[in-house]
Image 1 (cartoon, each protein chain N blue to C red):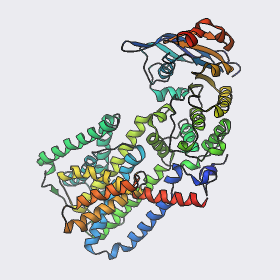
Image 2: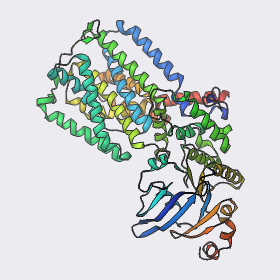
Image 3: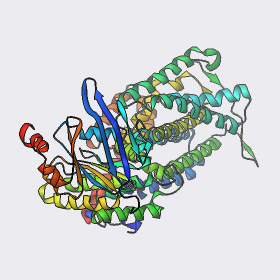
Image 4: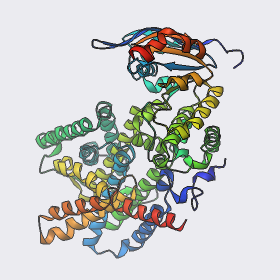
Length: 341
Length: 252
């Protein structure tokens, strides 16, 4: 048996019915991603400031969204508390620059390491729990830290937050000031590309396959000899690290961090992005980010209750396709393919 | 295989499982030798599935021990017991519904490689796994359905797939929990053939509700009733045993 049998080129058998490996390895996602990246690289210098800040936000949040997809989309753990790691990442940067006088990369490393540590400790407790309990305990965790961040003003600045001067980004041969928005733009773009490549790689690796097996049937995976807890913990930590990175970049962009980084909004948003764009596709949640950000920037200007529209939109999307927008496109493509066969 | 044949592979000593006041397994002493195909029969509620659940770590026994190759495995978690070499199927079909046949078997083989944690290799390029998946498909006769999504298979094929998934971890002991349940008469012969073939490769214990099917298999048979082993022997001995007939025809 050749391996090639399993990558259905034109569907060897079964009229083009395709499995998950086909769907995750989809060339479509890769294609979309690289087109977007090239467009971003090219338009960076000519973006007007308003649009620049919107695109920056979309890119930073896409990192959050893709990381979260590993958790919700690939291991089906619905965390309602990832604002904790977003906030930890943000404060990791702010505090290490303010108090430790850390350079740019060191501060970023501290931010990511902190979210890793928080996720590890929280995960030890929460990941063992099944669905509803997992949702509740993750929500509980972020709430505790949100309240702490609000009240421990000596450390966090509470609601008012802390402003910080971000040190220049040194690349060995030269240093660039993050205050130049183009530097910020390409820095974030670099992390966006890195995030996608790393996660896409993981998803198509043996580890990714284990994640999918656990999502599809956790009990069966356990009886195949997988220590399901450890794999779920790994997915939890992985998603938290990218949430932390995203929070750090967000704080860098604003040069500021406050307790709101821990707020409920940042816990709900990743779920909304995933539902809207399509779970388990990496690219889908990014599309969710784009839609949400567009609403926030443009629709909110003429109607402050724009979230009502978003809510209706989510319901409509899920009514049409439970797998979100990308899921819908993919199933249409698969239908078309099997139609030809 | 030849040398080991007849040696005890699995042994339970005084295995007891009670749920509150209900005793599902009552002091069960059971053993199976290497290379055997063993059938377990018994009426509903006899404790057959509970027996499997205790052996595989799904339940912790109230009392007693399970020995695999002489080593105590009782109380270990399911994934560890699986790694030790016991693999099982389930009474109610328990597969990966949205994965293809190939992917499901791949998942089992992957758990026995050194690299289930490896995030750097592309899963598609691991030749050993794909070759082995092909072999297993061949053995159970699913080669031409490798790329079908599992939930689209017929019930009979799904039962075969369950066996294939269990087999993919290269077990030294395979536990089949009523593999024929709900399988149409048309597909049952094929399934039994697969089971006979698989039992040539690995020691197999099979729960079977239908006495006629159990008696048609080549191995010996153990009879459970009310959490206890009440009889054991060759199919002909069992079919002549009055106690067994009483359970199945009289009171049962």
